[in-house]
Length: 240
Image 1 (cartoon, helix red, strand yellow):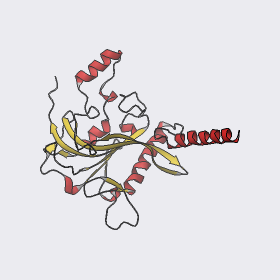
Image 2 (cartoon, helix red, strand yellow):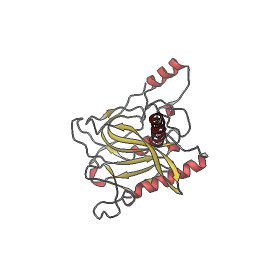
Image 3 (cartoon, one colour):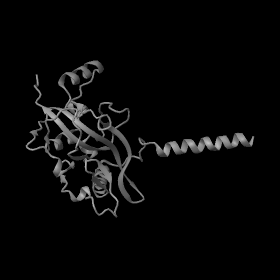
Image 4 (cartoon, helix red, strand yellow):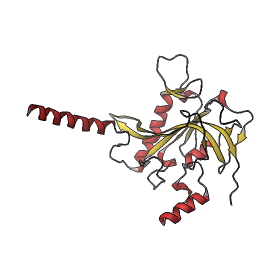
C-alpha cells in the first residue's frame, strides 16, 4: 500500500514538473495593449542581457564580462512596427546585394520564438521554442515561406481547405521588413557561416493573434521571434 501511494505521489510530481517545463505553456492571456508593452520591455531586457560572439551567435551576457559588448550597446534600430534589428558591423558584405521584399533567399539562421511575460514584476521573454536552426546542419534554408510565400503555394492551400488567406497567413511581416535593412552576400552554401545580425520581431509584427500557417505544431499567438542570421544569397523573384 505504501509503495502504491509513493508511486502516485511521484507520478503527480512528474506531471506537475512537465507542465512547469512545457515551453509552449503560457500565462493567462492579457490585453493586446498589455502584450505589446510586454513585448517592448522584453526586447530591451534581451538586448541588455545578450551579446554576439566572434561568429555572430547570440550569447548570454554576464555582468562581469569586460570583453564583449551587449546588444543594447551595438546601436540597435527600432522600426515603427516595433521590430528591432542589430547589425554586427564587421560581418556585413561589401558591397553586398540589396534584398527585395519578394526575393528568394538562402538563409543561414537560428530563430527562436518566445512569449513576453511578467513574472514577479519583471518582464522578459519566456516559453522559448525553436523555430529554425540551419547553423546546426550547415545548410542554408532555401526560399522560406515565412519571408515570402509563393502565390502558387498560397492558392493551392486556399483551394485545398476552402479558405481565403492572404500572404500574412504565412509571412512574418516584421522579419521581412527588417531584413531589407541588411544586404545579402553572394557565397556558396558550403561556406562557413559568420552571422551578420539579429532581428527581434514583437508579436504584433509577427502573427499577433491572427490565424497562421502551422509551421511548428504550436500556436504562435502572442509570440515574438528572434532571428540570428546570415543571408548567403538573394535572387530576384519573377512574379507571374
